[in-house]
Length: 146
Image (tube, rainbow, N blue to C red; front, side, top):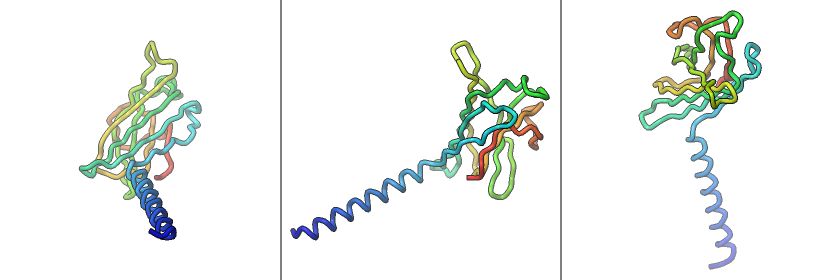
């Protein structure tokens, strides 16, 4: 086999391998960081969104250094996670439970849910009740649109 043909086969193989790698990473989902919070400046976190085989979206939120909701001014009783879609639908998708137990050195919180709507933005508010239908004015964390 001529050297030129081997070189072309090698280039083709590398191009196919690179394409497969790019496709595999793009199908893994989105991982988006929350913007800095003016209400709880130490809070940091991210959101992971993945589409499953049933065409639903798995949403996972992880946060560190999230102050207890009762310590906010004004005091609230629960952190609520909201989802916004491209169609401007805003939906309460649940509440955050924090982990500040004996073995926890930082205030940590996590949240997981599945929805049939494709999210374009995730944000968290502090609320008096977990089942509110519209977000209140106390915005704690928010992602950019993704």
